[in-house]
Image 1 (cartoon, rainbow, N blue to C red):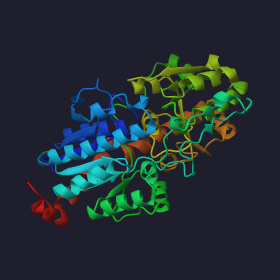
Image 2: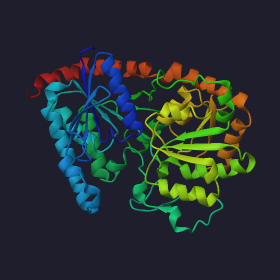
Image 3: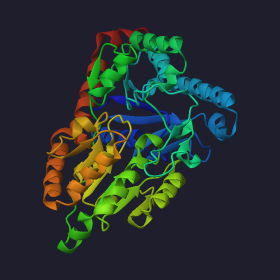
Length: 434
């Protein structure tokens, strides 16, 4: 397996940072450390990003920069056309590089799978897809607005209404927008290349079934975390008291992450524990709106918007409790990282979090958008530091036993090996053009 070459395909990558990008970088780095030749092929959304790059030892090729740079300023129809052309360029790139990889690994079951599957079929190289988000489970008009949780605020306030582009739904959303023919084409292509689908959580199987995408070869391989980088803090006794009063949320500031729900919960927490502090680490399109909400709710003095931070472990070490109020997820890296740092998590009962967190053992779960229950859960841990430490120790043990980076990489390496050795692909490679 040491010489196996993996071409990792993802639509966005560093310097854009999110859960999928974080996982791809960590896995690519560890695969190379384990002797595999892992490389990333992605889209070049800004011309200022180098076409060829190396990120933490992982080679990166960015394509279609001339098509994608500045497209957000163009009419929507033209944006879609340029993105379609960029996908064609990406497919051509995979064909051109066919002698440099043995496996195509696509992250996100989206439009990206179409050119990758065509390249797989033409080159005779096996392909697999990792599904990253199970979506909201709700039917939403493509351009329909949504509202942030108002709580005691006037729900008619115009700034509570947000544009459809402020969030992303599940991986399949872009294929669903193509209509039944688009979904059928994607299913046909994936079946034709015998592409396994890797899901991150148990709920994702229901998501695929709901869209008739339960193809043969479904594997559950959850997200992972580097337990050497993310580890509990060795602190001086004098630091414990301040940390015990601080809750940390690491998240993009997007609608699906539910930070508005957290702010509503925090208002209730403040009423009973005014000394508590909330640290929100991350950036996103709703940053100004959420800052305005914190002001309107009167919690600004106890909330720090820290913005995007490169040293996430250091930010997690500033608190003793973590929270993630997502409306929907795939398997949140933020929860894995916080638990690896020995923090108990209060999270919503969504895909991934409900698999990782065992309520009353290593954290607490609440229903999405239920800010009153979230406040109660946060107060439970803030008022009982001993229980919080107990849950945190159990959280670290959970990560070490089930979600460490090396453990998850073992699963992927075994899957890559089975694909390369599969007689179907051995015959396909023999028949493919050189």
